[in-house]
Image 1 (tube, one colour):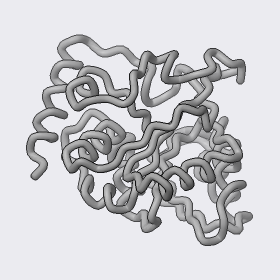
Image 2 (image 1 turned 90 degrees about the vertical axis):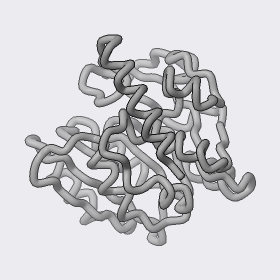
Image 3 (image 1 turned 90 degrees about the horizontal axis):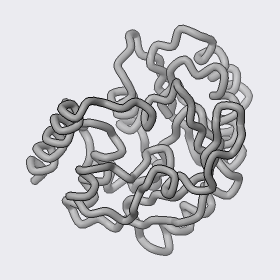
Image 4 (image 1 turned 60 degrees about the vertical axis):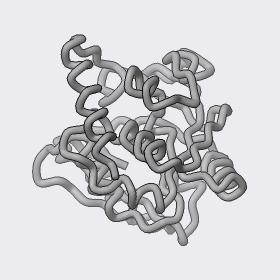
Length: 231
């Protein structure tokens, strides 16, 4: 998990995660130099948890990609989940994802989610339908519009090692993980059921801000170049 000024939401999200883990699991959090009470809340929750929680705090703001990269570089589990700070995992998310991981020998898994507004009211029953994500994707369709949402993603340790270190100029870590999986013909599994509440509001790092067409095209070109450089 990467956090930044998430004091209003992070406790509910982290609790929803810890409730379905065991002491054999671990949670890795990189805080991106928050200026609110996020770090204090995280330390309090970690101190009371039977699940190991490791927290690192950036000395300065690095942005979500570098923060997620720092967390992922420390991950040792055979299946690694990505999490945002402001969502709520359903109680069976880990069980459902791990079952699919084992049964289908997957390297990348992604599921759907119900969409909530900041007040907790449901906007849509499906994030993929709401956001017009047509899964599965090809490399070409993904470069046009990434449909693999990191907050709903889990990856194998094998794929993680292939994806790290992240190139210096990529659009987003979740899109990069998908492109690496496609490049190396890894097994990608799409679970159609919603396994979390995906909260949309003005402070979300991803999925809310519209960029100029020029910026979008430049970003897609950078992702294509990084993909082509994979051996």
